[in-house]
Length: 80
Image 1 (cartoon, rainbow, N blue to C red):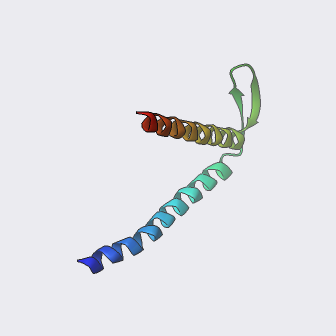
Image 2: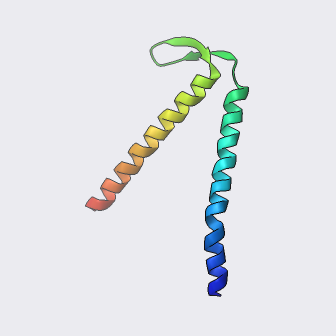
């Protein structure tokens, strides 16, 4: 039983790295294949930019919001 658990723990990082690698590969291919320009309406302005930049901007905004929400959740958890 202990050997099975040890084997599972040793496999888990490789599965995680493989999954992360596949998602990263998909994201890179998605960005590279969407190189055409599109009109994007921002709140106060609009511009015709490459879809790559829209994807990367959305990714950055989502990442920042995720970090902020995680920090807020941890702060609330510590207080109460």
